[in-house]
Length: 372
Image (cartoon, rainbow, N blue to C red; front, side, top):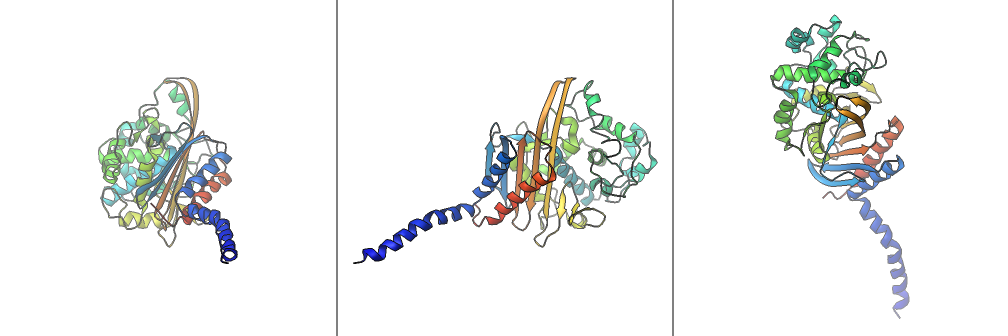
């Protein structure tokens, strides 16, 4: 007599089981990987990697194609955040200030290489370099650094940082804009910050940033660790770093609010400057800070940046040069989650395509209710 009662219950359970299973999957970090793979497929890429950290701890990692889990990958312009945080550490230690002009910060460099052709460059400040308001403009004459790079690499190696050589290219250029006038993204600003780090610290850029900022975060160097990419060390402070994606996710934890003001974190004064949009706006409620885009939120702010590097040159000093990849990192402070992506090749994605990945990762992360 109970069979007719149990049958509807059994049927209902069979109907609900797939729905409940799908809901359970959506609540886990695996949903972030699903969103990433869907975007990779849609954008026509077959090689890449993803790392997700939560609370500064790696909770998920995935690869596609030729990518190897845990391998160090080049970061392109994600390197700018490494430089920005390194400079913030020098400011927190009192060696520099956000309003320090280049006439002071690069006095020895100017004496060694020659004074800037444009005298206004003497008054450009550390803060203006950090937020791409130093007066450079790629729309007027191209990027002062990457523009001459092809010609230089016909006769010299890409395997040395060569900051001094690239600084000569910058110092011989006139500024298209008045310093502080408006935001104009260039690699030249972060090359100059690399020179600032070397002059203020008395050490080479790579060693100082790795030892004083990355190592205390548990991010170590070596062949498989954090270092300037051996083949592209010339990109140095504006695009030269490589490291495992999980390590970059741990580094991004430096942007977390409440970190102690020690060698590996952004101190209170630098953080206040970074979070203030005054004089840093780029539109859409976002501004540029310490090598990242910043959108202040009640949960502590969202941080993100894209990077890409495509370069082909026959008959270079180092032989045939051919590389193409892109990177993306985002921190959602309200969730205390960092997501880092590497993809090859770079396709010069339009903002709409980039926003699709950003939105997809963010939506998937917000659905997670059970972090490992």
